[in-house]
Image (cartoon, rainbow, N blue to C red; front, top):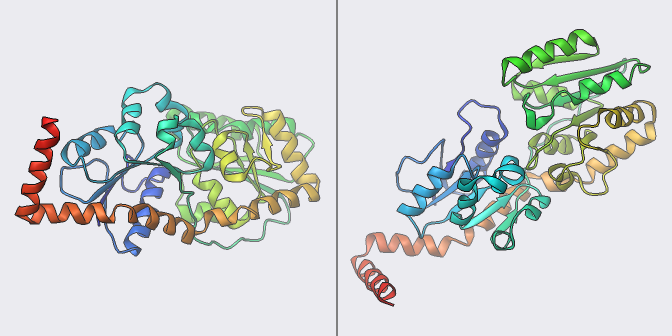
Length: 344
């Protein structure tokens, strides 16, 4: 097929939507499809559209459905979609109805959909190419926090938890991510001055970020909203223990029984888990074991096969539509069929 893949994240961006689009494009090309990535649909002809983000891709979804009502339209739902926009935004809600197929990135995402939408939805977890786990530092306990400094990420929770870990020596928190506002950068600076154990590196390239993650004793994900954080998948692939806010997006990837959850926005509870990870080897080992038990979810072959299965259901439809475009007899039969349906 010729597929247009729509993502609102611009080229060069390190936002999760862009990385998902690039990875899916790679999988689809390996499966023999021709894929173009765009921020918005420009009206050119394709066999199918895959779009990320219900609200921000709404214009492209609507234009595609009007132009090609019988061609596949697949919508991938982000965390902002599932846990914010589809509850109150009309354009996001309409996008759900326009799509032929809905994709969520972790199992708990299905629970946010109506029965009607759930009937056309499926789960495809984000995969990660294998990286090498590096030896954590011996002289200190390294905690990584990876994600852009946005309100949805609750970015300061780990730095604030340090206030409750005053007796813990040899602890370092490294935070990686772009400041999306001047205020966020100023706050990061204040927190670094307040506690020298905390260090904000800003936005760095993905390879460097993965080196920090691969060396970490634990990673903290304190987000308020996640559709299925790619950085959690990366930690799972590496076998790096995760301490995470107890929200559906994290539960969906790590599992209900995972032993490393803390109550959302509760830095004291986060500090208690960090203390246990630092001082109780058995607890840290239990986190690592639980993370490794989820590695089957993030295998690239699993994601690629899921995409192959997703598109295979449309093979007959695409072949039929191509015949119509090139066969005058088929076009005439289709016109008669449409006229009969309209008359009825």
